[in-house]
Image 1 (cartoon, helix red, strand yellow):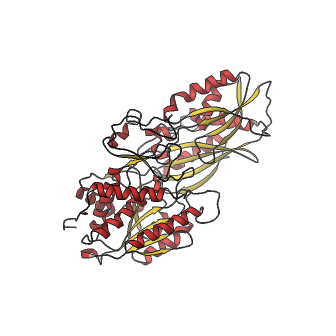
Image 2 (cartoon, rainbow, N blue to C red):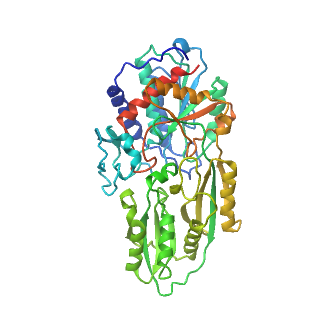
Image 3 (cartoon, rainbow, N blue to C red):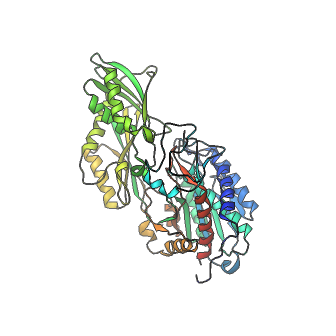
Length: 511
């Protein structure tokens, strides 16, 4: 594209304030996914958010459609020199991860100096540059965050905010050319549900859409054209009677360090499965685990029952294992024993297997908190009591097919081929290799606003397989925030304005 890009006339401060209003409007709507629901969308809040988003885009001139699955499509006609260009799709997911709680307003730390932020609902956590060096990016900016009790949904309501601000800026600046635009919200991305997307992908292809972006990345001004190959593994430990040998039961609530797998290393993730396995190994034989149940909303937490000869010694062991991680949100507390609780040796065998797994040396990185960049992970993230005993679930992630196969083989070797394996999604990289313009456009747009755009892998997935199958090439764009799906998540006023400007520039680069 040879013509100079046009910038919005509005100042960064004006854009940021408008974007903040958009963000606070959408994070006030409850739209967390529910993996136990058979309906699409899995929660009614997603349909409500789709309705509100459709009304918003309609106010700025879009033709809006919404189907029974809460797919919402806002179509803006092209204009100027790009009026007849191929249409471009920008997509977000309307759902948020389980455990997300809506908020009506966000906390603002203006011109943040990098010192500990104030979390009204969770003063125990420490979020500063000393603890999280990657936050240096946000020093000097107006940092926006929640109360600290739970995530409020920047994944992916921040991407939605950027698209809303884009539509407002294009309406305010009619001289800016762009191709026909389809701004799309889709349901249930967090639970990997593809049924609602097959028809949507076919519709986009029918309307001549060959290119698009999900606006769902983490780092500021990143573009992603590859993601993990992913599988899930489940290991069953059958019920078995346990001899308490005079030990007394005690229940504790273990709080892990809550992070997304993508940022686990940078944020010091710890799951209760790891904490409990380390504590059980250190406390044996005086204490053994006879019950384990991960929290249904926060997989990193769990209620654990021990049988112990010396509760004080057990508590000292727990503090030794957990204590250093308290500033990042970890902790433990004694809780009442569950009513009608029956001890089960399956819990101890599960933690013993986790300890064996952690001590194995398969030649590749195991835990998410030890993995970054193009490295994958094999992560035992939760354990749940089931009718047959205790089921341990693992996430297996790798950027290569051979790497994922090796991770599956490692789990099967340690379980005697008894693990149940479910393949989840594949790396989109090979199918985007012949569409380099998706990266080129994103970089050109970054140059236009004075930002360097980095090509990074997605340490997760964006659920674009149905679109790729339909011939719609979809890359992913960063949105600029910290600590996805964590009570510590934050963004900034500058990220709101900068990413909206990036999208305005991007829609002028295509064609």
